[in-house]
Image (cartoon, rainbow, N blue to C red; front, top):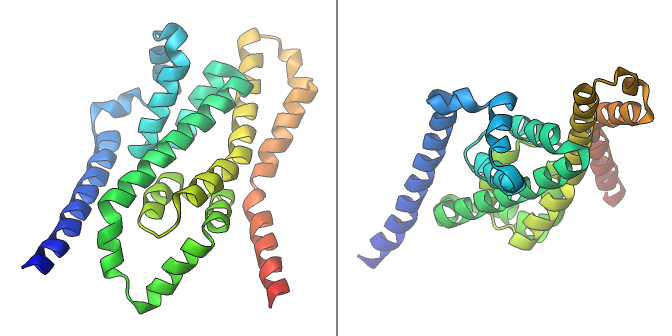
Length: 232
């Protein structure tokens, strides 16, 4: 009797998690909310927040991460409204809060059920993630593994929260800065109407960083492969 209760609890929580994920995707994809998911609409909404716009944006970004809203769209809004530097800060903070929330949702609702399904073959991988949590999370962030699915998915594993947090914090810094610096720089020139600024060092630097970002996953994979070869 007690054994059935022990199994029933994790299954119920896992079912709640599935319902939450499906509902979140449905709301973003198939409801009127989708009409507001544009740079222009979100920008207008943030303008009405006045001095509270940064707080509103960070909160919206964090919620958006949990609701599977497009991260590129949210980051573009932040860079376009707040510029390359503050935009980077607010995007990074919002992404981190969202990543933490999604992790704990996955950990609380799905970890027990996932653990009950893990067999001997998968258990060694689960234990390996616990031992090498920081390196695993950092690697997956650097190769641009889908952000939101990874947040929830890591909550289902044995990875320690501190490893997840530090790996995510460091892993998304480079990509976030490159993207927001590029978008924010172009937006500043567009808004000022000073088209001569397109030939400035700032623009060339941002374009160079943006192009470089596409090579980060390959560079990371090669470094990882070379480390494994060295160990062998």
